[in-house]
Length: 379
Image (cartoon, rainbow, N blue to C red; front, top):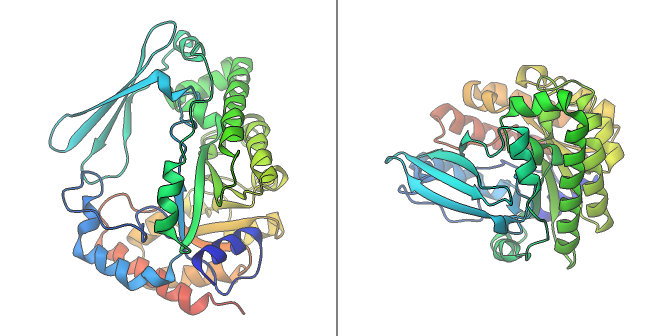
């Protein structure tokens, strides 16, 4: 099977020749390696990383994200044409990006900082700090901006049949909570509950409107919704997911399913009470399904019992295991995961590297792939 066939078959519960191996971010086998001067990804020019890549390349399957040009942003999903970004260096090692959001009630500002050698960014200022700011942001007039398929078209020939393309969406709860300090979102979920649901409804309607335009042409893709772990313990109560996620994410999943696009849910945390809801919403798969030692509340075997073959599980090697455990431990964990069932399984990790990999982690990735290839063939 090709990587594409293997990933799709695993996601839909069809037979596979072996368990797919998806290494997540940090392993873009279909792209050229960046040079050492690359601000965020220069660590990937290390010779040891390149050697690992070459030794495992043929055994790994890909899921490559694409976007439509800002329609599914985490600023209430407003029209991206009302946002203006400016990047500037703070020092040789730090870059800052300031986004000005033009609203009828005055400008709001968001500031993020990125550090050299780390492919992520940190918020240092959120646009919403008060109910007044939220009102300003909600007052931005909405219409669906022009859709760009450039990301989709550029990735397709590079990816080929190595894996699947994946349209990224954020859970409406995350689109709400990420434009403010998270403790404020938590506070308002209690003190301003009706308002929060009103805003979540607006965000969902905007996302649906954008999706309808995006899906106006046939697309060879899967989709992923991300971030709903914010509504699982220990961040929020077990009941929060059913209140703040399921009624809204479920509508996005339903629309994607109408267009025969399988959907994955990315959700960390305690998900034993969430998995049945994912099945009901129509998700095809979920990741990373974490055990108690990894910040979750169930091993993959228990997750299998809860979903009863109705949901593909993607996981569940923990990132800290890959960083700190022995290679023998990783090999045992790979066998344990595969022994939970070869159907409806994609062998993956809770996260991928975003900065320089340690020598131990490099060894553990090699052990992971070697053991998966030897042990993961269909029986």
